[in-house]
Amino acid sequence: MASIEQLEEKLKKISRELSSHKIELHQTRGYLQCILQNSNDMIFATDVDGILVSFSKGGEKVLGYRWQEVAGNFIKHFAVDPKDFERLIRTSQTQGSAVRLELPFRHKDGHTVYCDVSLITLTNTKGQNVGLVGVCRDITAWKKLQEDLIRVDRLAEIGRIAAGIAHEINNPLAIINEIAGWASTVVEDAKGLSNEDRDELSKAVGHIIEQTKRCRAITHQLLGFSRDSAPEKTEFDLHELLRKTIVFLQPELKYKDIDIVFNFQDKPIQLRSDPKMLEQVFVNLITNAIHAISDKNNGKGRIELRTMCMENYVEVAISDNGPGIKEVDKERIFDLFYTTKPPGIGTGLGLPICQNIMKKLGGKIAFESQIGLGTTFKVAIPLS
Ligand SMILES: Nc1ncnc2c1ncn2[C@@H]1O[C@H](COP(=O)(O)OP(=O)(O)OP(=O)(O)O)[C@@H](O)[C@H]1O
Ligand SMILES: [Mg+2]
Image 1 (spheres, rainbow, N blue to C red):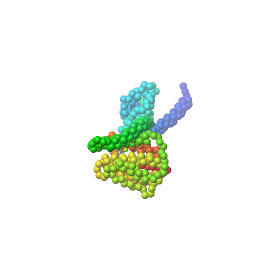
Image 2 (tube, protein in one colour):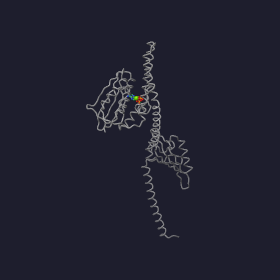
Image 3 (cartoon, protein in one colour):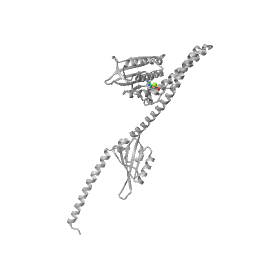
Image 4 (cartoon, rainbow, N blue to C red):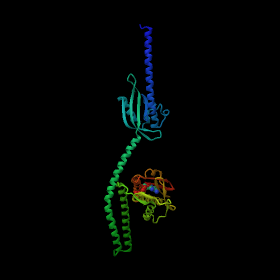
């Protein structure tokens, strides 16, 4: 039989061991708490039925719910497809763990959150299944970036194809234009034609010439868009360029009741940039303003061109009193080939081209629009 001293010694040893385990347990708990509090991932634990028993701070960020709101709920109900999530849980229960990329969850505000999910089955000392721990990393931003890259790649491909077609079409267009010009002279000089027939034929040839011009303008825009030409910078007077642009657009403005208002800064603005590229931007923006006003069809049209020198850039604002841009269109107007105009009027090339040019010139383009009041496009051109 052990003496009292021996028993005391044993008790002391057990007590020492116990305190050392307690310290270890305390440290492990602190460590786990630290992970649960600070990780950006959603870390959760469920009981054997899949009911949530713990939910990290990161989970609140990923799904938008606080712990009090999710406690006692089935974790699978936060997945977009609960059945799919249940299958994954079963895999983890049979294999001890399961990893799955991209499982979509539903955020509290309704949007979808894509998570990279790892599940680990919890077992007791007898090896029985007692629950589940899941680590879910929010990969929504990464997924969006990946989709954007695919879209940009596709756009670049479309751009290359479009440029190829534009290039091929240019020569036949030049020939059609030439022949139409010649036909117009033939019609004028033709003998034996009644005045009525001559008028009709002249009109028809006039249409051919007009439409050919339009096709050439489109191919010109397309080639400018896809060609990776570097800007050719020279010094020029911005106000003079804007006035020249309006003169160039006179045929578009003819017969339209539109006032052009120049609201230029007092002093001339000397710029060093690519005037041809900038002219293309102004032509596109003013043409859009003219079209918008023509759409409105009531009251007098007004287009204001305003210039202002800022600290390191010049702002050109082009405002119209057209119908404004609808909310649904606002997000898409810079997309290639996005147009709200009928076929034959709009191609959806103008604004993406403007954006592309401004990027090349190191500047910016933005807009403000109010339904019923009008639209202002602002172009920022860097001074240096
Ligand atoms: N000033 C404006 N007022 C109202 N809507 C505008 C204005 N500018 C652009 N938009 C809208 O943005 C769309 C896209 O413009 P964008 O210049 O890219 O193409 P488009 O004018 O339709 O065709 P394209 O310029 O190729 O002839 C237009 O169809 C129109 O709906
Ligand atoms: Mg346009």
